[in-house]
Image (cartoon, rainbow, N blue to C red; front, side, top):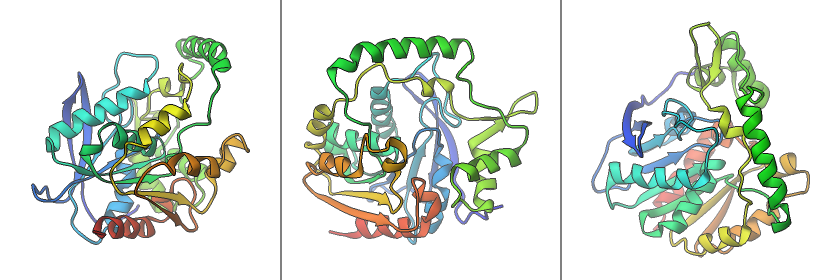
Length: 302
């Protein structure tokens, strides 16, 4: 089992009629912006443990489980709307820091949320770090009828139980599932993470802590022009971090490329790029020391 270096504190806070689970590390300080870490799709806040352990300095770290993930309450819904993440984050910052700006770091889906938030609320973000938060391929208006139809069909599939997440018969099986998805993940980290990524039910099955409604396609198209209009309002110095392994090439097979993403995010005024070597999409698991150094170096720059 992975030996954690820094123990987190767990608490539940009321956010928009939901009981939100939040992990914290380090010492709260009114004089230093907290480091807010937001996770990706089918992930949990505990996923940042390895990076937090690798940080050389004491940071007040705030990391929520998004709605319907981890230990945060799941709303009575059969699908999830992206704007809710932005509002949840805003309410969360109200709760912890009031008007104080934060250093905001997001991975994957969380990276896209963080980058949008930094454009929607530029005054609330001191520094922004996007970890493989690519967003989605561009869409066309002509796709709208098919997208709505697919959304309805998937809601029906969800209701019939056809989109339920697969249960596992043991914690070991969960750990092996994590390793299968990411072969770079060490066995010790996989076993530690498995106990936070899943939990056992009354029947002894281990179920992933993620609501199946997250698998339902978004009814609305992804509008690149809207995204770029938001990116243009980002005033925080921004670090865009990608892994040396091309995730977009693996996922989209040419339908959406890393070059396209870089063209989108190029509209951010104060933008820097970095690459984490020998890492895939879960770069915070693969190379936590490299990533922690990148984060701290970036935060230390005037």
